[in-house]
Image (cartoon, rainbow, N blue to C red; front, side, top):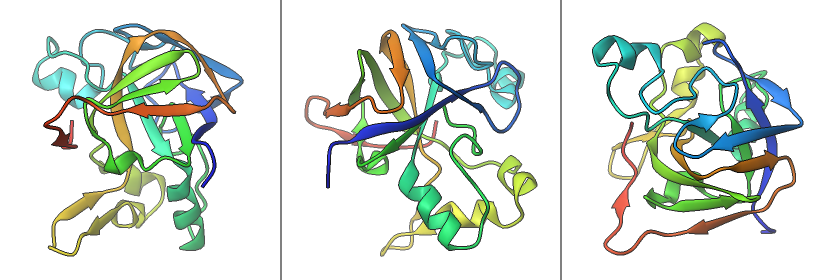
Length: 180
């Protein structure tokens, strides 16, 4: 497989489900994607704000692998980068296999992975049956969430399609990703 890279970048200033394609996005240290509705130090996802608006924002950047779109399109879904609300669409890196705390060097920015995106009911409202398609079971019967990973911005910078991605694992022992 070739070099891991960014396929597309997206943002939305409103709390819409899908995000809009951009030529580039700017990641701001400790805050997230400049101009995105989820930008900030404390939680911005409406369900989390309702529970406790003072919680730290561990979901500043949503990354999703383009290979999932390939799988979904092959299964008959009409879904494209940005449709599932991600900020950064990647190719060539197994995001779901990363450990908590892995740092992704993306262009000149750095994002630290905080956990998995937990698919919500909005996915089925977008396209019926899509929630089931982004969930799976492993050989032991455990639930596998395939809707990407979330992270926080450690080093700000511009990110655009074509930027290389390099994963830097955390110090051992590492922890598997859990939903955030």
